[in-house]
Image (cartoon, rainbow, N blue to C red; front, side):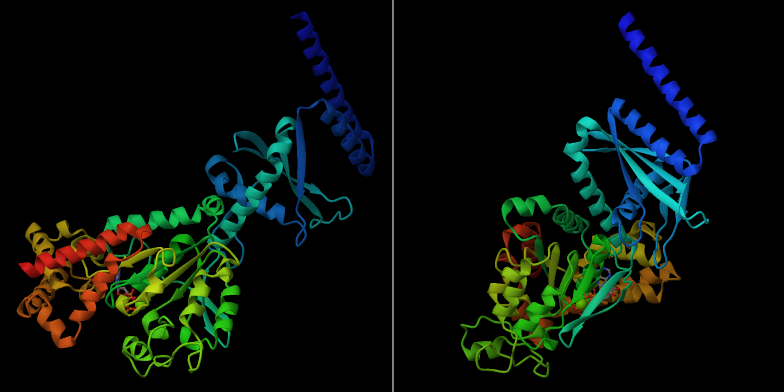
Length: 503
Ligand SMILES: Nc1ncnc2c1ncn2[C@@H]1O[C@H](COP(=O)(O)OP(=O)(O)OP(=O)(O)O)[C@@H](O)[C@H]1O
Ligand SMILES: [Mg+2]
C-alpha cells in the first residue's frame, strides 16, 4: 500500500513538474521554440500514458477524413453537447454541428470507448486570421488501437457519405442519346402519404431496410447486392407514387429508364454501368416499353403479346436477330441479372406495369423481381390515409360515425383507385362534410354501376378486360416466394373478389 502511495505521489510530482515547465516555456521562449518544446514534452508524457492520439487535420481537397469526422460527430453532437458551432453549406438542407475549440466528446465503437477533441490553433507560417489550423484529435487506448483504428475510420467514412447523401437534394435521371440527364427530384410522396394497407406498407419498408443494411448478408450468401420490385395494378393506384416514396425513404437517386430511347443492348449495358450505387433504376410500363418476350416464342405469339398500343415506338419490335428492335428480353435480363448488373452495388430495380399478364415469365421468375407488389383499388385502410392526407382528419372524426361505417361498406364494392378518390377529396378539401358526402356519393354511384354489370363482370366484358384481369390474378399466384407476403395479398384479393362475385 505505501508503495502504491509513493508511486502515485511521484507521478503527480512528475506531472506537476511538466506542467510547470510548459508554463515556463510559454513565458520565456519565442513561439517557434515553444511549440517544438511543447511537442517534445507531449512526447515524454506520451510514453507514460496508456492512450495514443491521432491528429486529423483540415486540409481542403487533400484530407477528406477531417470533413468526414466533422459530419459523423455532428450526427450525435446536437443531442449530447451544450455548446456547439453551427454551419450550413450552400445547397444543403441541413445544419452541421461542430465541436467548439478544445471541446471533447466520447464515442463507443465495437465496445471500445474513444474520445474526440476539436482544436483550432494559429498556424505559425500564416499569422493572419485565415491562417488557422483546425484538427480533431482521436484518443484511443493503446491496447485497442490496432484492433479498431482502421475499421473505426472506415465506419466514419461510410457514415459521413450517408449523411452527405441524405443532406443533398435527390436527383432524377432520364436517359437520352445514350447518357443520363439529371434534374432535381422533389417528389413529396412518402410512405406516410401513400394510401395502402398499413401492414403491406410496413412489410415493404422492412424489406427496404433489410436491403440497405444487408451488405454483409449479400456478401455472405454470394448474391449481388440488388433487389427487384415489380409493381403492378390498374392506373392510378400509386405505382409511381410508391417509387417516389421509396426514393425519399432511402434517400436514393432515381434513374428513370425509357427503353424506347435505348438503341441497343450494349447501350443498355453502358447506361447501367453509368448509374451510381444507392439508386433506384426504374422502368415504367414495362409491357409497353418494348416487346420483351422470350426469343423462343413464335412470331404470331410475339405479335399477340405485344403492347396493345400499336403506335408505341417499340410496340412492334422483335428479337435481337433479324428485326428492328434492338432491345431484347435477354438484353434486359442481363441488365438486371447478368454479370454486369453487379458492377456497382446497392441498387434497386423497379418495374411497373398495368398488365402483369403481358410480361414474359422469364421476367417474373424467382430471383429476378424479388417482390411482386399488387397496387390495388382503394381499400378502407387506404381510404383512411387519404382522408387524413387531404382533410386532416380520421374517418371516425367526420361528423356522424355512420358516415365512416358507410364508407367502409361502400369502398370495397366501388373499386375506385386512390387517384379517383384523391380527386374528389382535393376538390372539396376546404369543406370536410361536403368532401365526405360527395365521396360517399361517388363511391355509391360506382358501386351501383359495378353491381349493375354483375360485380364488374359486365363492364369488363364491355371493355374486354375480364380475361386480362383473371390472367393478372393467376400471375400473382405464381409470384416468387421471396415476396410471399405480397403474394398472400394477391391471393387474398382473388379470394375476396371471388367471394364478392359469388354474392
Ligand atoms: N396509393 C396512393 N396513395 C396516395 N396517392 C395516390 C395513390 N395512388 C394514386 N395516388 C394519387 O394519384 C396520382 C396518380 O398516382 P400514380 O401516378 O402513382 O399512379 P400509377 O399507379 O403510377 O398510375 P399509372 O399506372 O397510370 O402510371 C398521384 O399523384 C397521387 O396523388
Ligand atoms: Mg405511374
